[in-house]
Length: 264
Ligand SMILES: Nc1ncnc2c1ncn2[C@@H]1O[C@H](COP(=O)(O)OP(=O)(O)OP(=O)(O)O)[C@@H](O)[C@H]1O
Ligand SMILES: [Mg+2]
Image 1: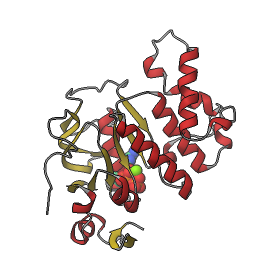
Image 2: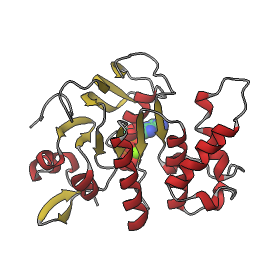
Image 3: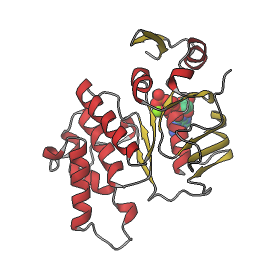
Image 4: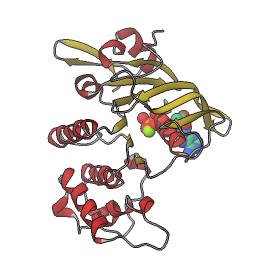
């Protein structure tokens, strides 16, 4: 099995945004992550790819400190232990969110500011401006005052991304933000990711969209409870490694005269 290098890198000498070392985690004694080790340098746009149940959401939740690993550890910008939530933005998988909560779209995005507010502080005008700007970035500004439950699935996903943006975090962990988006919204979101990367942010994005990762991401982590491979998409999206990752859930994806084997 090829492992490109131990670190996903954009340029030599940059600090590591994220490290996972020998991570084991699971539920009720059943492992979901087995000895997961990788690291991502600051300023990378990395895709986390694997079939349903391969541990992508679990890995993101372990990094966030929402799920305790059995063994191993993670470091965010060099610090182990409970991560500084002001430096970490998170978009949960849409299916895990209760959308019936009676709040507006703007309220949801403002929640991204709470990690920066003290316990007694209410959102200020500046917080509201940042939240509105985040909504503009995902083209939802005109829906700011609508109830979140009234939005379409794709709009709700974009609202979650806006909430993570409003945190102004340096490392963004996004769980399937691209699923269910139409081609235009997907294109806009990827352009947004590229803009964030240019600002020096680091993004780890769980996705089933291999074509997007192949075309636009710096790196890919192939996960199936353990790390099957990681490195540049052009190096790790080989038939052998994708077969090892996706096993029987296979689909052929054609992109720019190349064929990728992927998840259906
Ligand atoms: N709360 C939970 N309780 C028990 N088992 C869980 C829980 N959450 C996840 N699992 C199990 O852990 C394994 C990994 O699940 P996880 O949600 O991390 O996968 P995933 O790669 O995010 O999948 P998907 O592509 O469907 O989102 C699966 O076998 C799943 O059934
Ligand atoms: Mg998931």
